[in-house]
Length: 104
Image 1 (cartoon, rainbow, N blue to C red):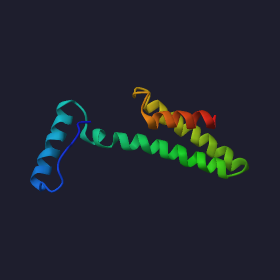
Image 2: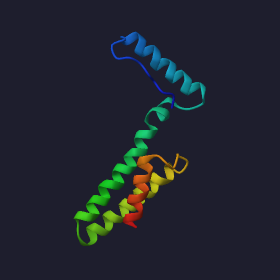
Image 3: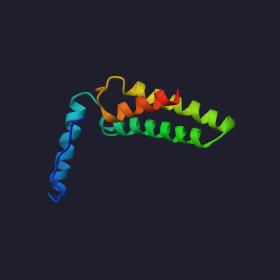
């Protein structure tokens, strides 16, 4: 994604020009603007789902705990698959890998 940097208070015209330039660069590089702007958020959402299910697995008992654990493992695996090409030193990726390993 192309970073968008602007100062607060510059006005709507400057912000719109900066946003237009950002979208233009995304389209000219062959990427969809929608994908470029929300892809990282959806990937982090998978981690949030994994963590929520892991918490439910720890606080539930019996079949509910087992089902939540299975859902958590699947969500962690999905998150880690989507981040497989990321820099391995990213802190949130390290945390997710450690959480996944503890859950297995």
